[in-house]
Image (cartoon, rainbow, N blue to C red; front, side, top):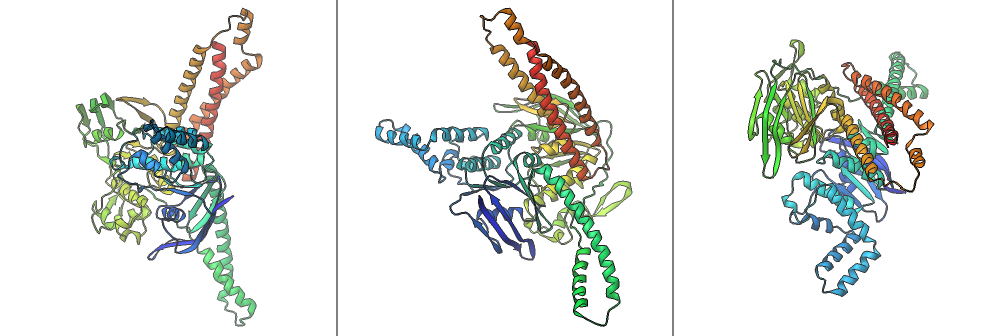
Length: 626
């Protein structure tokens, strides 16, 4: 069933044309993601779909009576309402029934009102709905329902807006970067929620694992053209590569044909017959195709890093706490050359505080931070860039110098550097306040990197960056020879660039885990399965009426199960070896972005196979131990 159709919409701001004459449809239960570069008009499309903005031309046709909810990056909420009042302020009829029932509970003397409210709860089957919406609020860490919206942080407001959208269960949910401001646990819960709920989604997100596990269609806006891929992110990568290869073949053919027609045109035939005129017209069409260039900008980051000495950074018994909230307790660590550490943990466990202590922005309560003489930090914070009024893009860069040193004694100008960061010459003279959120992040990232750090710290660098820019950043970080610390909720990003993790578990507990995020999840899941199996074993009640023979028969594996158990051990060992070989391939500096994407997909498939076979191995193992 079609819910909404977009027909030939266009949008411009002054001379800047974002997109023109694009069309697509949204059907019930589809989960669609829109992929495009920053500044291509993704948010404008979301605003037009949700009714917050209008297209310059074209139209949106929606099914009569459908409800559309829009989760914005900066939600517009009533600051004077509490969390609970915000939830109940919607026009959802079931929520109003629940609200009336809760009011009736506060006045038990009014039996008539209570009976009426109780009957309404029964009629609308609101009991399950009440349980569900409270579970959503709990999962999104919105436990205190009486807190005023005005007192919430930006992240809490985004989570409240998300909870509101999920609870209201619209016919179409439009999402702008839904995983921003969610910790990893929340993101994985949201993935599972969307997977099991029959909801129609249209979203923009940079989270590639989220795209992989939630979406069943990808729409890409590329150089003004719209391409549709009926599958998840892996399918999109595969089919896009095939499309680009086909385009390259067609362009090559067009060039050959153009050369042939050019020879004919140079002969300048005197007789301008209808046939020759038609051929001249065709020539101009062929010329346009042959000269067409994809507006791709491959960033080649060759910034010369300052040499590191033998001493990097040493943390000696660092402690830090806030009232009723310990962050670090005598934490010790010595950083080594070329270390690549990812930091994960729930919101509020002290990740940003740790980075601020490391860079000297926050003082520890006790302990000492020793920084080597040659260390130069580059710190990308969540605050982003703060431009001066009337400042242009080029001016922001020139504050750091007109030329940037590169490897092998080379240098490039500030203008050339900006071009490498996807800002063309015209864009460089735009005012910074005109840039999109993602473009500002890209500019800020550029200002951090050009300062030539040898110890790079990135606090949530992937928020608001498009997938194209993420691939560029990942390519740079894979080549970066210095120390690297990354705090990110982007699991795909973390899997590609870090070697081990600091897991912030809260209450000053920090675990050093030797692997990337997928390795960590595999380890955690196996622990959960082991604990569950052990609990089941301890809770088993043996039937005393069974004979000793019956009990023994129940413990033994069958012949086929024993054979399967031994086979699984061999298969898991082979897969682990293959996984290690694949991980080693990532160190190849000649790999293209597409090669890395293919390897990532293959690595994911092998990791999933290991998890599945290990789980079965544990089942058989526990049966042998019983």
